[in-house]
Image (cartoon, rainbow, N blue to C red; front, side, top):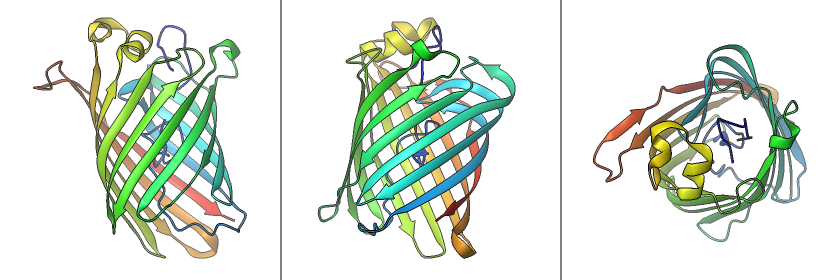
Length: 259
């Protein structure tokens, strides 16, 4: 898991980038419910620029940040490499550059979407700070609407440090575009808090966030696409009664190609 003091590695994208997570490390992990041609080998590359590297409500870099990813898919297996590098940093914790790897398997029994994943987070300049997480995204979809639960646990630097999100999603895709909206409640246990949060927030027993994000992907000719993504995090008080630390919005603009 990440920490401000030792520059440990970080979402998702996605974002995936969230998307992503949205596979990558910038956003909450959000399932890609695109139809899977299980016997087809494919890969895609994507380049993005963002104003903010925001990880589970924690700001790591702010300014102009370049992010890129490369994903290989075969038989429901996904291998993703994701990079984040600050071009011009105005505020943050100097965690740049970062290189992350994610291996996941997509399983779709009926209306369920299940994606176990194993993630490795690295800093080329801080090799000893690398860490790893194991996650399990479980969603149930009825048409374009769905609910999901996404627990993730550190398994290397901070074993037992857990962060999870539970939420609702609207996911609508056609041959021309893909539109997703997510709203989730995120919680981190005491080990997550003590390891990742500094300052006054370090003394809370449970880390609670509201995560709101949306993405729009417009498909073009020859496998090219453009995509926009917005992510908002709000930290909640101990009794959930108020917002104690709203975060600035993370805006990501991307262009990519599917091969």
